[in-house]
Length: 472
Image (cartoon, rainbow, N blue to C red; front, top):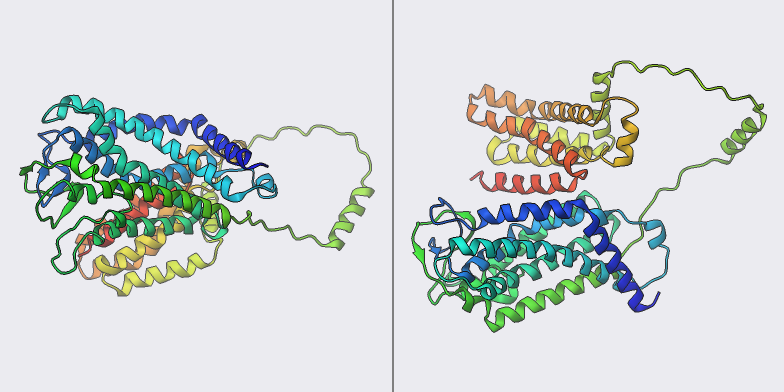
């Protein structure tokens, strides 16, 4: 392949697959609904953005900045889920991995396709914000300022997420659940670096440092005010209820900030090229064949006489043995023996460690991975059509899996429950119910709806992090 052919083909193929996927339409329909809550009206009891505990007056650039900052921070995990569980996760690797071509350009083309797809959704969010600006602004509408203030933080951040996803998809080790865990910690690290990189260690005041702000969510806020800032809160944060006027247009048009966004966009493109350079072919296990068994099978096949075919009489299927089906799902969860040891360790921790600060988070975390893996095991459409001919339908299989996961989680949390009852710490029983019933049910339902383990795994990891952080 020539240089232009490789880049163009990877770009066009992945972009067409995204555009033909119905998930893009569903997400595009959900974006305006999300925008409605991302820009609270004057009577709302919450604020999505506050500076020193004060709520900025909603001008045209502030509206764009609020939407852009939320899209660059809280919505980036959803962008990763959309790409990781989207149509491009399946590819004809039997052909692509063997065909000689420039891997770096191939990765760059895939990154451009993913980025353009995310920018399409960002365009829908922009249109929703412009509609909201006609009803909720404290001043005149300005389409240009709203669009610029929204796209400068969000567009490079989404491009960076697309590049990280490609980088994790480049090696066999991070193509499955480990890649989702790595992304979660990278996302947290980028958020923290944006805050720590703009905080002076001596005065503890926040200073404008755009280059350390990968998601571009702190620097434009700091550049919008001319006084000391010690706290910037995003996403339904607590506040004093007082309003403050900030110059968001000055913050987003600062030369250093614009340069930093261009640099981070270039870094994203560089990561996509690196992903192509380190790309590893899909690892497959060759079936074990023995020469003796092959020759024996050939001899048996040669000795079979030609018998006229007669169709067998159909035999009506009996009632499904749900107990056996549940037991089968549990056995499949523990096909990897390491999970048995991990869950035993978690159960013992519930018996000897303090529940809220240690045992609860441990139980929550270790149950996520076997359950999310099980939630996507039978969700492929071709597999589903085959399974429909053998026993219960999709709803029945989902119910079986819900019961199996709940049974496993109840067994694992049983020592912690016994200790809680013995020590009369009944306030932790709702936590036990969430971990042993609500969490596995939500994971199975997310797997059934999305046909992928990525959504449930990443959302539950974020929920676990909130649960762990709130232990104090």
